[in-house]
Length: 420
Image 1 (tube, rainbow, N blue to C red):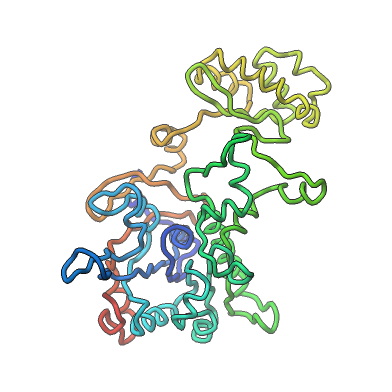
Image 2 (cartoon, rainbow, N blue to C red):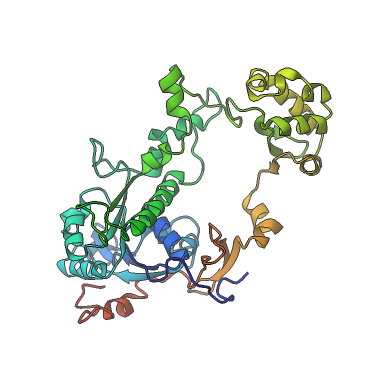
């Protein structure tokens, strides 16, 4: 599917203006999500700069400028293909926030905005004279999404925070391991993404709150700060981790591919690969056992409910593993899908790219980058029936929209506004 071919229906966030000051993952992912649903997102990026001690002219090495994500992972003609996902639907404006002119230009952009997104270390914007107190005095309706490692308050607020640390502090990394082994990371920056999604929720809540008076400190039309800490976004998804410790002193331990306390739910080896099976519903368990020829377990009264199955999970897993191990992945999928038992293969990128369900759900969209590379990118999530999201423009080149965006501000041009 070509992202630019179908007509664009009305979008939920049309008319909402966002200035994105963040870099890398958390802030920009939030901006990408808002842009997918029609918000006008102006991404402010730093200009190229010379750093002392390099090997370029006059002993300086040129930094390419822009969001560092432009240079992360696999590149095509010097630009990351990840960039084509993270910055779709956005405009790129180059401004130097280290200069008074650049900061004033950003402030004037924010004067017209509904939302500003930043994921700098707490205190950075205040140091530049762009704190919430200053910006909200100029634009009382402004909503400020602030994403940081540890939040805007508390004893850790000034520590640098990356997703890998947030995942550890939030409780997820400890569980992501085989028993007795060193915990591993998920392979993607979940802490950043979870924080971004919490940030989007916060922005939408704050936009809704602007329609109402919620007290003398927040009259109708006023904005507010949305404070998201990476570790808190991870911790918010840790289910029963804390209440189990609080009630019973139980410290949940890693369990590999199994889901402790819920049975059966695990990964099982087949003759030619691996599948995951979720047979933990009472009626599902019975269907699963019948499908694998273990009617004795299907009718065992002790296994009719989850508490009994948890006690005998090793026996159940062994029965399932013996059955899957003698069959191919396709055979297992055919039998268990026919029995309405949740089952799936473990997908690689190649599996995703060729899967008919992904295609039918418009989750594989085609875009063309500025330098002519055609590639697939993930589709829009969630699906809205009346005001669906859309990809309306490709990811911008560095500073592509600087002159056009800044010229819209009365009396402000690129050079006057401190643009590169």
